[in-house]
Structure formats: structure tokens, C-alpha cells
Image (cartoon, rainbow, N blue to C red; front, side, top):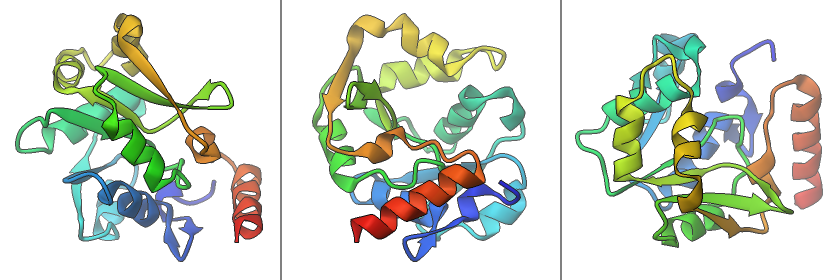
Length: 178
């Protein structure tokens, strides 16, 4: 992208501030995990966010989730996690996912799953116990029978803004939304 995705302008803020605000409507605390350029990004993070550095970020999403879970004083009953490159998720999607009592709740739009994901404390503990060389999907797949898909009317769950063309498409979609 040429610059950290977390700082890309979006909806009058940045990807990071918008995601933090959206999650903050239904979640507390909200933890932000930072890998590359962690010190710089944490310095620019919203004050409402608990910052956590992940020095192992290059090993994958599992280590980031582990860092975020360790940043909390104690594991809550349920944990919701998402990626910063999914900035247009709706607050209503977060609410619907948190209403599920499933061990794992994953949103689905037009038959495709996305983010954010809600997991029960026992799954969060399993993630903490997983070796850093493992993958997050290894833990999720172990509990495939326990996954509850929540159908939502939110294309934002499928966003994965990984290149300038996708960012341009996202901004164009935002203009059309207004």
C-alpha cells in the first residue's frame, strides 16, 4: 500500500480510528495490535484503544491475536476480533454477532464468511496456548462443528483492502453510499 493501512484516510478518520469506533459501540475494552512500525502506529492510535505490540507479527494473525489477548487484564467471556483492513464493517454486524451465544460466531454475506469473528473464552484460551508456529485457522477448524454463521446485510465483512486498487474501490463505494 505504500503506507500503513491503519492510517489510510476513511470516513473522516483512519482505518484504525473507524474500526476502533465501530467496535467501541458494543465492545469494551477495544485492543489494537500493532506489528510493523508498532511504535509509530501506537503513538497515533485513538486514546480509547488499548495498544499492544506484536514483535512476531510476520508469523501471522495467530500471534497478533495472542498479543491482543495478553493485553487484557483477564479474558472476557467472549472476544470479538477483526482486521484493520476491514474498515467498513457495520456496528449492527458487531451487535448481531455479539447476540449469538455460539462458541464461534462468524458473519456471512452473500454466502461468504468474513470478519469480525466472535469466540468464547475457552477458544481464546486455546489460541493463547497454541504454538506461535501454528495458524489461527487451525484452532478455528478444530471447532468447525461449533461455528454459527450469522447472515448479515454488510458487504464490509468481506473487505480485504490489500492494494491501492481495492482501496480506490472502497472509497468509490463510500461515495455511492452517501
